[in-house]
Length: 496
Image 1 (cartoon, rainbow, N blue to C red):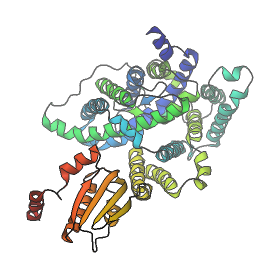
Image 2: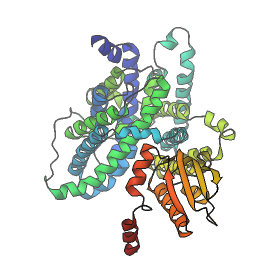
Image 3: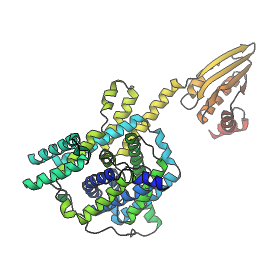
């Protein structure tokens, strides 16, 4: 157990602590911005980011992943805050956590296996574009000093690692923030700083039970918002976990992550914070800065709280240009440039799924809508392709007045029409055997197709027998077929 603790927490302490500082600095402006989007005080987002970071470090499944207040979640809160106020938001955030724990307990995180690689690529590319677009307001209608500081910051980020000896000692994003801040202060440049983003909290978070009536009316109000927050939060967190899994060549438990995110949102709500989820931008900053274990996530949350409460006078001096440079590095590093080259090699359906996911996310600013769009398109293409992949064939054996049709293949909703069309219903033999030894029936649509075939032959005066069913096919056919149940057929006719 001690060895497991050391591996999960203390196997990479220097890099984890340094990356924690960088992530904490990158979290501050975003947490403030997301609070403003949701229509609440900046401390609601900052307290949430601290709580969620610290708690998911302990309860989550994906070491090194950063979770905090996010823009996608904030967008879902706007109407609730506007119509009912902060207390209802805290109650909705608490219920969000409960629902996410239930999702994890029911093992619904396993549904992520239905998200194809093309959707993940589209998700990543869309997020990179959104991260880049989010920096543009900081580069609009500003003096040339801001452009110079941003360009200088990018230069430090990409060139510092090549310096001999010291290049590997410190994460380059942290060096960028320190150098750009020192340069801005020494030259007395009049540029936008973290202090201009909004007021920082001056006290530690305290336990705060939502001041709402515990009635069914309250539950009715917050449930739709909580359901949306829970689903978006889980979707973003599991997508981000998949990306971090790939970056670190490790695996994580999706259902445990769902429960960990839920516990974190409950505690955040009880400490006066809004619900949040995993952040791909900050997670990539953490990974690229050397963070690998749970200590990096934990330290990011702790450093965030220390900075905003105890070091706020220093924190306010950091130019936004330095943080813009860091986030641009994230956008450039997040985008899958290889996916552009692979467009010519991948199938048309794969490219359509990836591009549609990107377009849906960028235009709606909602990652969940993009992923759902991709999943729907992937399902449609799969269903269409499966008609050729899972072909239904028929070997016809004629022996006098007896004809045997030996069916091969998978019969389900996408291939049921093909199954019906296999047979020639004109001038049939007196006895027809349909041999299903090499076939499998998957759903009620397939069973309905079998009913149709049998009844068509019977109308022509043929006697039909079904043979060779495997156990699963026999079960579903026995339960739902009507060709051998006259009373069920009669009820169906009467029902129409």
